Length: 428
Length: 171
Picture 1 (cartoon, rainbow over the protein chains, first blue to last red):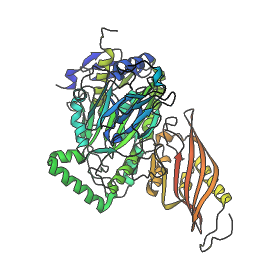
Picture 2: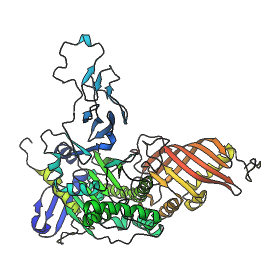
Picture 3: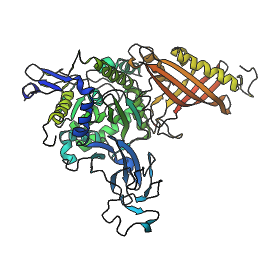
Picture 4: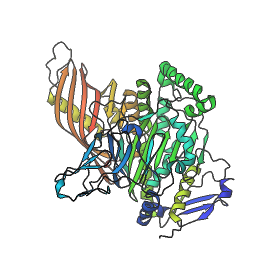
């Protein structure tokens, strides 16, 4: 069934008109406090949210602390090897039990009155314990509180604040195919390269969802990046920009395409020289042996911008970035971005990968700052929403298979967003 | 610049005062958006780096994700880019003011000087002023034609760049 036949709905926020080939989103969705509050309930309290990567807690007792959707959490591997997500708050009076960004500890001790917790969350010591009744914590209510759900898919750990949520596996559904295409690049598993980009954008978070899978803006917004590629040694690699967008169900979406930049796994560019060619060929040979030629070529030569609903972006382009972001207000978000890489990668290839990453990605790259500027200018433009009330996301609605520069993948996000935001609920 | 010669090297020795003059000039070129002239202050194999805020002194761009890690080629491309109207984040150009303080010569090996200074750089665009706080670690080569920057590592003394959003200017 084509998109045209399948879509026909209208809400306060989204007009999905398959007959006329129109898709409109209300600009109120980017500015209203009521929308922001309802998103917290309907989306961030119920969807699976990215917490961290297994390599960040690789050894027993490793921990990182992280703010996720307004909560302050501890993500750790305990002494027995189990992986946990705890709320970072002492069960006595509330202070953080961990004040470091990362480290290795068997114990989390509150510095206020000295309550101490094992890294499995158990309350193991209280100064002046003899002043508490016997059996004080028999029911475990004074142990560190665990985040309601914690599950992992191929090394990506997600949490859910809704105890009754479907399993992560079921939630990811159709997007697993694309996560697999990224994770299969590694022979011994992926890891986060050191260094986290932690920035902010004064714009609504949904603008970054759109932007991260937007193939339409590339040539215009990122003209200077294309100029740069042309100037690199030997110029760009000869590849089409062919490909397409897909909606994967559940709001997950992807664009998959060939592109002219180098890929550490595994598309050579002249700038990497003969040694680079040898490295890339070796990786390709291994992939073909393991996955067959067709899948190996898809893994190595195609690029993927993947949106995992609602707010995790896994972009497998000139490097691999994991990016998640949280709204603080309708017009502000915090963004965290990491570089993901195969553990077995040679130091030279890792260097090429990180060099590649920074030529495009991140707040100091040749592209992301212009995206940030665009998003912030959109947000400012919405001040005019009483005169101009709707965004247009119709591109490609007239096609059987929308292309990379069409907007099907963004419509996929908005359809799920609209479903969750406008569902009738007995409790409300 | 001092006219005394460093022993065994055919180049004028530089003292702190000389480096202050040099770094004030660099800051001035950046504030005036004379980026092509600014680029000429760098050696042909120069590097310009801004580590992520959770990196350590030992972190390198080969093992860690930085914000910026340019070799000389990419630095020249950064300048080319910033001189274009299509560098949207910096067009129209932001107003910047680079403040340089606490200039110190940390070591001298031959004609290579390790110089550090503190910085505060203000950037104003779209009625928003961002404050970049940190220190620069320079390797400066002093040759017959004067000082050239071989390495500039700009370390932000921040926990994140949430208050800045982006690093679209040169620090």
